[in-house]
Length: 312
Image 1 (tube, rainbow, N blue to C red):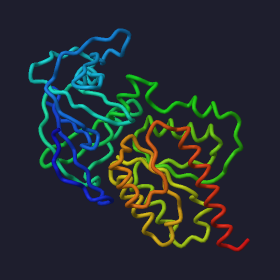
Image 2 (cartoon, helix red, strand yellow; image 1 turned 90 degrees about the horizontal axis):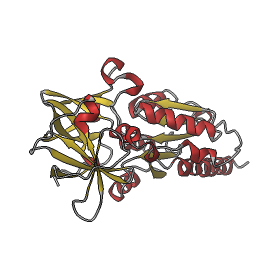
Image 3 (cartoon, one colour; image 1 turned 30 degrees about the horizontal axis):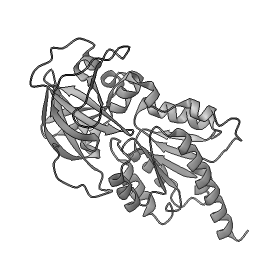
Image 4 (cartoon, rainbow, N blue to C red; image 1 turned 135 degrees about the vertical axis):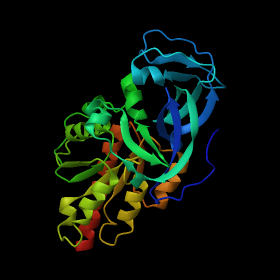
């Protein structure tokens, strides 16, 4: 396992980026997604799969799908070298291996050093770059691995059908704020919440923009009529979800706003970190049905608590 061995303190807004190359171009992945780096191995092809799926291999006791990342990014068949590596990842509760040409190293940086690429770089709504990171002297494109897997295997991503299966629901005007940097997932979350009856949803592309908007409500007597609950991703340029949660939960006016972490990175280690910063709930993508159930519960509890505090 190729990791830095540095444990990041929770809520400091820092990230460790593993840099790797494809055709001499630098790309990056959050170390929290990486489980192992392996020398590439023979792969068993699988029929009727996405063109970028090489097939499967079984390094130990688990079968892992292998994605040919050079082919996915370029759309061209690239020569497979004997020195190619597999980056074995785990997110959304599944293992996927990505073929790359080399691994350069790990950089520890602030999320503030990661900037959202404009549409000319990211490809707009179809782009797979969620951020551009300054790692030392190098600019590194951070890839949206959730977006890549969702395209290759749509059934592993958020399923609107989970919401539709709930049947007819009452409309809910409670203002829900969501911090999510992935354009694709942002659209899916908004659509899902709207279908579930939440008609007052505000989306923010990262934690920093949501925090800036929240600070403008400081001292506002109608705060809870303007933001009832916050949902946040963990990986986001400028400010991550742990930092956002910590800021909200240590603010004497905002601390009673429920915060739900909704991320592909939920693991036992991440749950501990989430509890440390005061998250009310932590859910793994793509459990959108579960998320809606938790929203219902938290908003009912909040309403009851506020009613009790007012003595009415």
